[in-house]
Image (cartoon, rainbow, N blue to C red; front, side, top):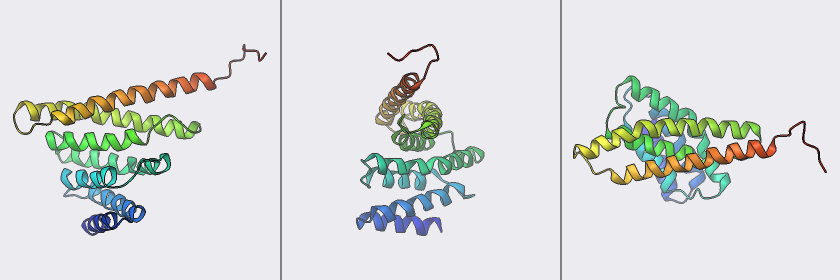
Length: 183
């Protein structure tokens, strides 16, 4: 079923039917993330389809990426239990997972939305922290030149720092202190 959804997603996206393509890609990602025979490559490709082949520029479209949070967690857990989280392939996959989470985790909205965004930012930071040495090791060992992925990881960590600072600032700005008097 996962492979069928993946092919359907690719066909829909390439036909310009992005909304339907996103739904099919999300279904495929979820199914593949939970398979016994999980592998990083199809997960990486599906994230690429969602992040690079679909126009997700508006905040409404980008917020749909938040629906990846649970399937990403399932994939990470599954890869860990199968000991497939220890090489450059896992590193580049974790960077792409983190990118999806970073894009949908701006500090905005009501308290529940900001709390969910903070949780996704923490998850993205953990993924990037795990990805960085894996990507660097693959580059150092000459397996692949993943310098560009290392640069993406650093940029995404800086973005997370900015988003966290905005979140803290929003909390401070919205706090109503009992000793403050409106004048």
